[in-house]
Length: 640
Image (cartoon, rainbow, N blue to C red; front, side):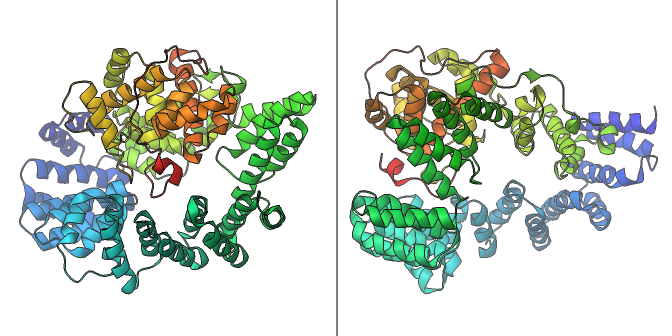
């Protein structure tokens, strides 16, 4: 066998955990492999010594390797050094290497093993606890340790206050956060202190704190403006209007734009002249902003609902000139074309529909236009994703090849890293790597099947298919919901407590478990979470006639959906008219996912609107689930 063949065989043995045999083959290769691969072979020798209980030998090799390891390998060398020093009883040295891992980890998933280990040491240091809470604000082990510390500073008190707020202990949260502010905490503490006071019924005090954040804050300023708008619509109008005026006059960028937008909306009925002033200010000073897009969309939608097609088209064409991202361009293109069709401007409608299909092939708006999609799915890869395997891969070091390729900015390299992750069975890893390549779907005349399968994977297939069969739910719809709810993370937890793959609220999980006559147990466990989430979705599918209605109910609660059904519009207009901003976007994204899954794996699109279920009695839990892990959700959805 050639040295390369020996290396491939040795790596294959390593992947089978036959470490001794693998190391024997690596010794035969010696220095006959390319020089740039030596550190990776040496890394496997370090791990082999560790796993053969020759820890001192492994430690010496790891120390030598640290000096010469390429940057992309240093994190893993530090991890080996940290473990070996710990196992040999060298606690101080182990802590040093775990902290080195934290420095080298370029995302929180890489930092977490090190932080978990640091917190497991006797007398965990406050700095390590705080670092964990930076990445994972609701990490219970870190919060428990922090709660035992004395003489806490502003940052620690802020973190404890935020956690108390999430746990709905608002009085305790306010106490922590007020103390944090006295010690110099910044806008984060003030924002959540205001929220806590507001939840405690001390609205005026909360509003004054939000004012300071909106006027002089940075990261939380726009959020504070949004909170002020919600407070205005819940009984604090007079107090809020003057604050929003102050912010709109003093602030530029998103906080000032948000204040002008909300002032306009709050004063449309009672003070139309003032509302017009803020509208003109927003469109003149920030014509390409998100809030300009929001304004033009809503004005167009109102005209549409009055059958004023020409006016609607004018607003939406103007909206296309904004630079707002997300769903806005596809939304404007679709509805502009619909309005143009109604006024007889077929050429403009055709132009916008062509642009929609070319640029947004996986948008729900494209599927509303053509349920079979705008581009065929092809087994061919575009040239930008084609290429030979890296040297590491050719010599069998596939795990390190994935790491190296995943850090590259080249689409070909990142795609190849995703391929390796998928081959290794890491579906979620492949999904995240492929996510950076989603923009390629806009290019070319076809959609590459392999990339689509990475972007729309089918993890936990056994559990999904079993639950789908048991409750009579389309499995593609379950994956569509899971993709939007948790991005396939079984440990996902929203700040209001929604859990796992299907983001079940605790009350919903308990209710569904009781209904199925089972013990709840660990609601994060994939088979449990999928089963209960499917039961809950199935109940909503039976309760409502349309899939879109059931999906909205899964997010916002069935009571809200029953109220919204009173508008009596067709399913597209109904979806666009959902008043909760979060749920509005959620329905469109889940339905877009459903179309893609059905076309990719079943070969045909689902029928929009009807789900084949029958209306049945029985109330769903009204507790909302969350679309994303986030710090902030709409007040309306929280109240529901």
